[in-house]
Image 1 (cartoon, rainbow, N blue to C red):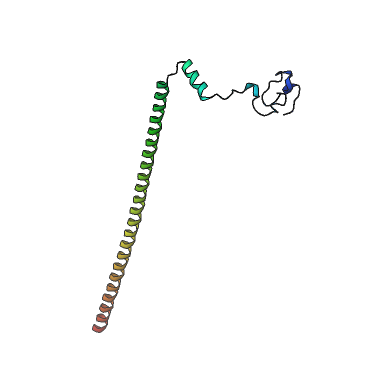
Image 2 (tube, rainbow, N blue to C red):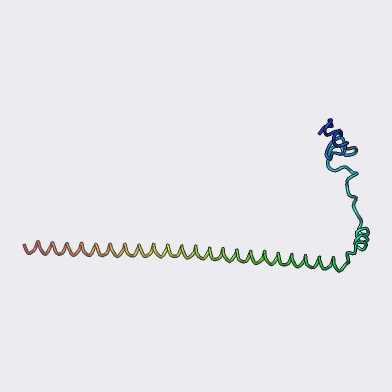
Length: 137
């Protein structure tokens, strides 16, 4: 973004974040003058003591966060277990459907075979009756 009268400082007095008008920043991000310097562990501990944040409080918060993470992990495990159980039930249902379809196919084949046998037997009986009728006449 190039400097102009709007972004170059006339309205923002050169402090617009992300412009070339901010010195030492070359138009990228937050100027060095606005950045928070990194703190050492010693400084953090000193500030905690100064503001009255005791180790016990920090330890308590850490323990509660660990419990929450453990509960989240247990919840995820339970959800996964339920999902696997549902998939198992779905798989079993599909298997039973396939078995039922095979059973129905076998029943239909058996019925067709028996009907064919009955039809042949009737045809044979009719033939015998026609031969008897022809012999009598």
